Length: 73
Image (cartoon, rainbow, N blue to C red; front, side, top):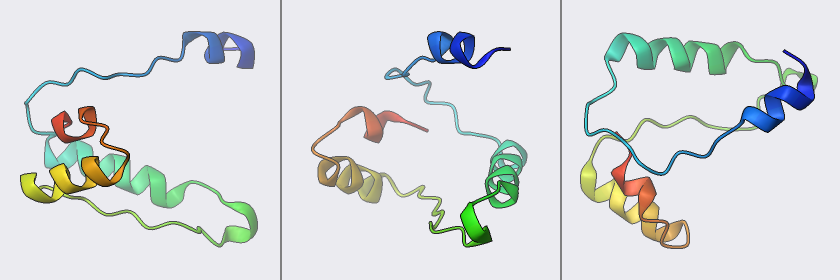
């Protein structure tokens, strides 16, 4: 797929299923993130999995009250 085609097909999802993400799928996504390259191999980020609904709600509020965040599984 060409870069422009990929950019044109990109979508932002704001509607989520209430189904929990299977642990195996989450583990694969986290592994891919950890294996992704970064400049100088410094990986200047942290990955935190949050499952507590109250904490997720607070994150949504802190993110300029983007309520769709609190609806993600």
